[in-house]
Length: 465
Image (cartoon, rainbow, N blue to C red; front, side, top):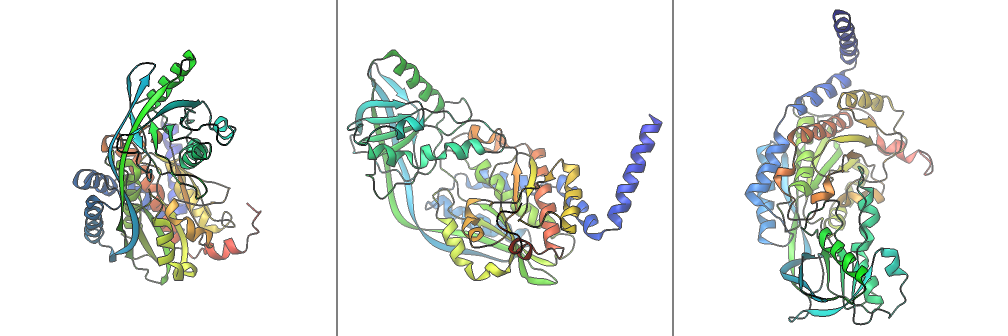
């Protein structure tokens, strides 16, 4: 045991000596360790969940969230704290109901998809055309579903990186218009979810201009499987569906704050998470946790000494219905040459596993330092370049702003995402602190080094890793 302890001590001494010889490494290590013991992120998401709750864009709750965000950033010491307003079309959910009426009565757990048109006041009823895969629906001829309710029951695959959700997303986003092109009067899709709860999961749809707009909702996983079993019996299934909703012009707000740079204040390291949420739960993991990670990381990265570059944090105001992305890009178009690195945290509260950085940067000395500082967290810097980050920063990334993507373990995330079970109890404080530590380390190195991701990315051929 003494030999092992001596070897460990020698390794620690060697590591400490290397860090002391590199001020950037020493600072990154210090930020990482402070983050692992810091409660800022949990305190933020706890307050947001309890004091504000659900934050559907365009509602009174969204205005309360705006005030909460302004007050919290000011209390944490950020400067230039302000709200950026932008216009949206608010979609407000009303009463919803669905039931099987044949072959025998059975209530169904459904939730309207964001942006869905309502049914007539008396609801809509039709025979079910059930498709076990989305590809089966797409293979159905145009006009073949006249008068029917199209139902897709394809399950979503559980993955650690969220790729199962990406693959399934067209079923919810495009499915209503595809069903309408084929004559359907309504559309139901199995929730994009990996859990086994009877709580359905909502999410936005995207109506296509060349198809009628039909009511659309998500079925709980349990009820989608019930319909599979009923369909196997061979008897026709009829469903009655009632969805109520309303739309109105409204305002949303992105909240921003900064830690000014002491050497290059005009150069910006931009991070953030979205402030709005869906309405069934309290939005604790989507995206209360992501917002809290970004704010805490920014605060910790600039807490000990003023950063060389400006660190800016944004709480995006209307991500779920796709309004924040173009609004943020328009508001910051003139700053595109000044943003050195941009990233969004929007994949829950569980531990970080890897970091992807802009093309051309993997061999930069500062990135070697970053990789060494992240290693104690069991987080590695991927050799693959980042292709994006969160939805709200996507338009700026397309315009050439370099992106950082911090991957987190998403194995549990889609058990609760967009449902009434998106609540505070799902957050593991230890995993949350680890994710903050990863983000804070990245932000610190980017804000306190000379690495210029803009130059490195521009000098890298598009096909190069």
